[in-house]
Length: 238
Image (cartoon, rainbow, N blue to C red):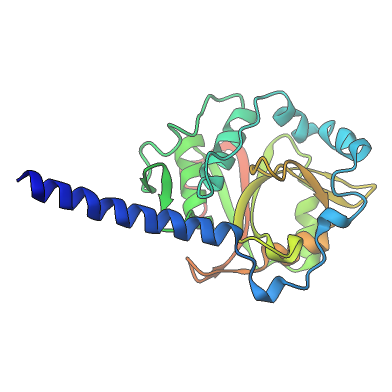
């Protein structure tokens, strides 16, 4: 019996290491299609101290600045961490250790399996934890995206974005983070990246839209936005 248990444990360990390796690969391997992309890290506004300081003063960004902004514990946890930060910005306590309680999201040794969260799974988790209207918005053109930008400083809303790092940085994969606001006079979106290695950054709407309008291989659907409206609604839109 002890031998059988040891073999079962070894098999489980091998599967776990394979999954963790796959997650790590998705996080850090640079897809060939983005090899020629000039990273937004090279743009003047990306993390310009003066612009970042102004961005933190925006109405929604200020609610995030007032909290302990959380960063993902591992490569698979950007989705849950984004929900944690939105909840905290709303004055509600939440942690990465508990945010998935009661959800249908599976983890193994602290990693979301099989390959992180899709936008629809993120929406379901946000509805579960906040009890608010959460809308999934996909396939926006630039005009429609700019219409959303006009609301990103509204304290009665929160935005989360699912995007691919490739069109922005020339490396990386799908990622979730809150949008903290929009500097209209500079035409820059303020993204609260939950990966500590990147931190908050500023980007032109066109570049962010390109990164958002990419295909998520896990769902077979386009990435997109979640719009959280601060009014209780048990019939939240799918």
